[in-house]
Amino acid sequence: MQKIKVGVLGATGSVGQRFIQLLENHPFFTVSHLAASEKSAGQTYGQVMKSRWKISSDIPAYAKDIVITLPKPSETDGVKLVFSGLDSSIAGEVESEYAQAGVIVISNSKNHRMDANVPILSAEVNAEHLDVLSAQNTKGKIITNSNCTIMGVTISLKPLFDQFGLESVMLFSMQAISGAGYPGVPSMDILGNVVPYISGEEEKAEIEPQKCLGRVVDGKIVSADFKISAHCNRVPVFDGHTVCVSAKFKKKPNREEILKAWKEFSGEPQKLQLPFAPEQTILYREEADRPQPRLDLDTGKGMTTVVGRLREDSLLDWKWVVLSHNTIRGAAGAALLNAELMYKKGLIS
Ligand code: NAP
Image (tube, rainbow, N blue to C red; front, side):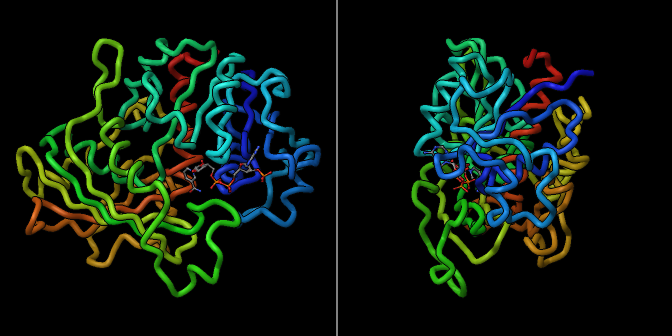
């Protein structure tokens, strides 16, 4: 089988590095185009990343000799799809240029998430949102991931929303420093500290899950109609966002019904046996003090959403804790799963 040529935009950043790691020996895709800013362009990936690689395995050999370019469709050498981990200051415009040039863009940036006809795709949650792509008026199409903080939250809500309906959700995040990109939050601001503000984060957390959980009606995504209130905090954890969630349901489920819904939840990735699909989409930990980033982050190679501490909430109905890997399930891994889904559905020719 001939592999599909793909590119990584923002290949030098936190998310970009994950893409480079996860795309090594991928059965469907082969990387031939890497792009970043002027600071990196013109040098090989190996040269640039010698002092910047932050993942605990070596830089994959396949990437080392690729010369980084600026993110321009004319530099793509025939790639069909690009994964974007570009900074949001530039992502919107650049991703549109690639889509106009006929390249599929799978983005991690906020810029296009709320555009009509652009799905916030989470492969187990809303694979049917791919149906709206035909309404995008460019040859290439743009697909986005949700914000990394609410990726796991939305996955934990999906089976409950489908079975019991949702009225309102409150969430309190404890977000890792790698979520701020590289070099991110200065060490003197975050070590031994908590920062109770992340610019723009609460606004995204309060609208993206409803779009993700929305339905396609007459070819358009109609967002779900429940409210979210979010508190977002940066904590001194390297990788892994932990979120405390409280929810009020239209029809209050009992504990067994919730645990059953989580245990049985799976979607298209599992049905299609996609290479990056976790066997278990949601894993519930019974221990009183789990999930914890240090102990649970690598569950399902970072693709499983780990949930724990389900208990009744004295204000709303139920509360629980969600952990998900921000650069894998919350970014590069989820984007790769979306690309695998599109490939299997014949949307990447
Ligand atoms: P990052 O570490 O700061 O990386 C940003 C990337 O964008 C770098 O490769 C950088 O290249 C490139 N870039 C910046 N300005 C550019 C320009 N003017 N022209 C071309 N390339 C430029 O950020 P990140 O954490 O990987 O995040 C990337 C995107 O994903 C952001 O939109 C972020 O919100 C989103 N996201 C991040 C996470 C996470 O956990 N980190 C999770 C989900 C979504 P140089 O190195 O050459 O400057």
